[in-house]
Length: 193
Image (cartoon, rainbow, N blue to C red; front, top):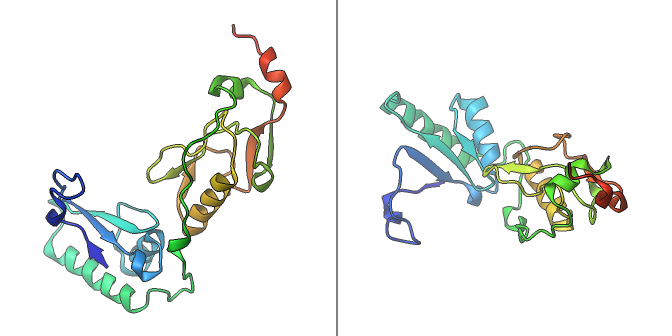
């Protein structure tokens, strides 16, 4: 594992760092940050602030004592010795980020008032989303109502879900289904007032 600190200042456009936030990079362990955070909590009683596919974030405050940090370090050393103890080996290198350039087919308002239907997510590729889908972190929507759902969107969201990411905004937290605009022909008939 590796932590980031003041050595990053003036590199890669980094002006300063908040030393109360402890970012620990764990991707080289072939385990996601989500899995590390879960193990720290369940096996060692250490609560991290959040995780992503590659790292975990802890916050060190005036309420922490040296013993707390020693506990975290000892837990990390134990996890490094058995990174895949639960069999959840991952290939983070295969995580392909979508290009984040969505095709906007309808305005969010048009999509909200359109005829919608909940269908299996895997069958929704090429259709128009009728709901927001936001992976956290960062909590920025990957899909919003009115955008065309791509294969990249579907694969990325399913991969994040498999890693343990929190994905919110949609009706179905399991991501098995998604609400889509069902009849694009009727969209233009929606009254504006």
